Length: 216
Image (cartoon, rainbow, N blue to C red; front, side, top):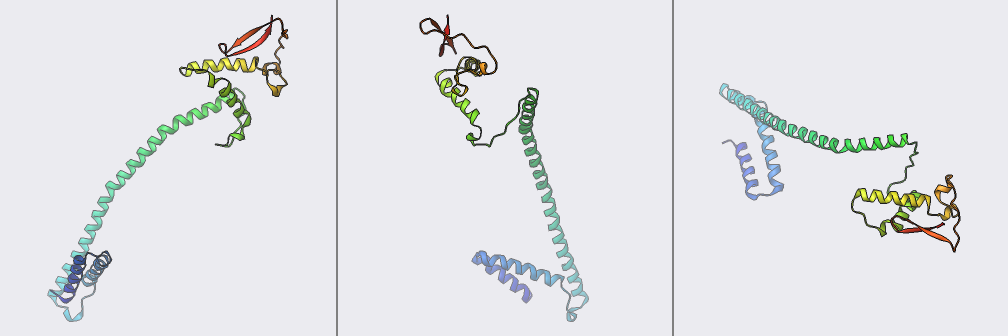
């Protein structure tokens, strides 16, 4: 065994025995560099014999073949990894489109309905309720005066009861902001006849939850 080879083996064995992370890595790097320099470097003139030249040629080409095989193995390993990455990307993209397309369709359908009904869309700041005070005031009124006081069994029952409250809210409930009139009267509906204090009746709304006086 040559002196340089013995030095490489001794350095590698010392690093493996100590088990130190700081010495094993540099020792492997030094061993690989010295191995490449030894086999790929030029042959000194004093050892230029046919036998030494043939041995050097075999060692040099063997090292090249080993490195090419290692690179080819890494390339073959990268093929299934690339295929797995592409499959994962396609799966994630497909799932994203499955959940995104219905939401986008519903959004554009809602915009089309607004255009057909000639309703102007007013965008508010997300998570800032005070940016749209009129809607928030209406929602609070419906919750405090009605939803907190009634039960509903399903979505159809809730929709039916909300329609009843809408009729009461627009046609019979007076609003202080409208000077004691109803939204229906402000829109042009006829004003009901005033009821006398000693001769009147009560009109029930929302299944008896609200009552308004009427003339008889």
